[in-house]
Image (tube, rainbow, N blue to C red; front, side, top):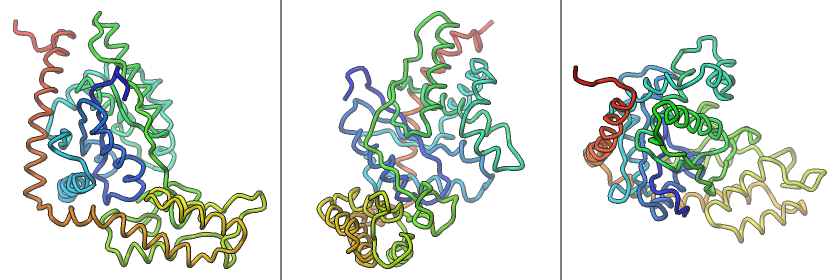
Length: 336
């Protein structure tokens, strides 16, 4: 643990089912961070989700379901603050303030915005200003550490820039210099297209949900792309194919290192049958996920809602204090 960091913040969108990429890439690390830092704050960022679509009926349900999944994975309400973004209105208030401290050019250079806008015929302003709200999410709690993946490092740099510009303008070091928390997050690739990161947006066959029915998950593993031929041989360069490497990587993530080493060695020698590899992944993965699924089955919507209500109350105490200071520093909200 870095002595300079005391409060961690991270958020996740309720865009659908929590999948293995989310769990091994982020959520499992969040669970571990609870033991390493003084305070951890985790948020279901539902306002971010509306930049993709408006689903007034489904969004609340997805938010509660995701929160339940996070609790089942090990996010402990006794050790962390867990809440839904829209339940703390100071998020959007601070985002509006930060829009006055953010350069248009900085937003236009965001790689994620450019990638998404190129794939869509309609680009809403929310997608463009998404990183400003993300900065507000982090800095509202004056968080000084954020666990991020490679695809979010640019956004964190923008957050630092906004904080610096705000501090410089108001003449005091109010917001902290947010540090990147390096974690052992691992990237899992699509089962159907192993050169691309696992994502729900690619389609159902590309991912495995953490809470997905066992029969469905096993079927996807058995259908996973490896490469041509009947054995998991290495490529001409001596490297395993992307599909085989992805499956062996999953074994390592669930602490089946000895088996992963055995499978890798056999694959390099061209002696491993794909069926054996897929069977091993299916059996060990289902065993690893079983305790999480059992905990999730015990949670009711009422249980989850109670946790979220308490978490929002805790979060808002911090957020209200921050916004009171921000309003004073920029000269709004003062009595005449």
